[in-house]
Amino acid sequence: MNKFAMLAAAVAAAGLGFFAQPCEAHGIWFAQRAGRLALVYGEGAEDLDAVKRLPKITSVAAWSAEGQDVVASLQPQGPLAVLDAQALPAVITATMDNGLWTKDTQGKWHGKGKDEVAGAAQSGRYMKYTTHLASLPAGAMRPQPGLALQLVPVGKTFPRHRNDKLTVQVLFEGRPLPRAKVWPDMVGDPDARPLVADARGRITLAVRNQGHNVVKTEHESAPADPGRADMTHHLATLSFALGHAPE
Image 1 (cartoon, one colour):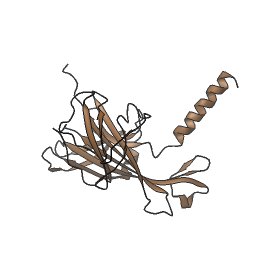
Image 2: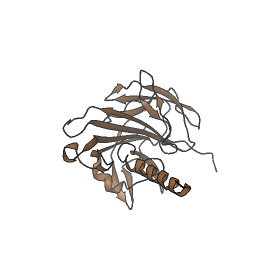
Image 3: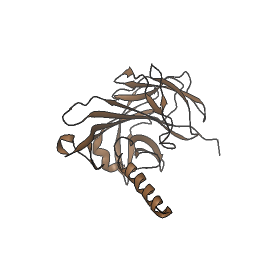
Image 4: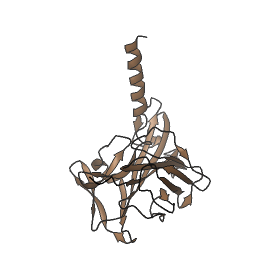
C-alpha cells in the first residue's frame, strides 16, 4: 500500500470512528456566545445545532447566589439557544433526553430502539445533564435538584486560577458514585484518559483553563425498557469560567 492509500485508509478509519459515536460522546453545557449565555451541544471544538434540539431539552432551572429560584428558559436567537432569565442567575441547570439510539452491525446509528433495527449491535437511551456556575461560589455547593447524574463542587474553596485544585463529587440519583470516571476538560482535551474518583465519588483535579472550563462524567445504568435498549447512558457536565487579568 502506497503512502497516499495508507493516509486515505487512516482518514476513513478516523471518520468511521467519529461517525460511530454520535450519542455517547456529545454533551450539553453553557457558554458565552456573543455576550449571551447559550446552551451548547457538542464535544471538543464541535458546537452543533442546539436550536433544532430544543424539543429534547426536558428542563431548565436557575437560582440566585442566595439560593432563590430564578425563572429561566431557553429561547432561539438565530443559530443559538440562549438563556432568557428574569434576573441574573448564579447557577443554571439543564437536562436533555436525546432519545433511543441503536447501532447496527454495519456501524450505522438509527434514532430508534433496538426492537426497530434489524441486526442491532448496540442500543441505549442517552441522557444529558449540565450545571453551569455563572457566578463562582465561595466553596462547597449543595447538589442541584432534577439531575440524575451531576458533578458537585465540595472543596472548602473554589478555584480562581488555572492549575488551582478543584474537588468535585459525582452523584448518581443523589448518592455518591464510587470509581466514577471524570474528564477535566471536555472542550479542550476531549480524548484524554479519564481520571477515576475514589470510593465516595470524589476526585481532586487541576483546573485546566484560565477561561472556560467544562468538566465531564459519564455513567451507564440499567435500561428502563430492556426490550428497546440495552442500557441508559448518562453524561453530565460542570461548566464555569475563570476571570482573566484586567486589560
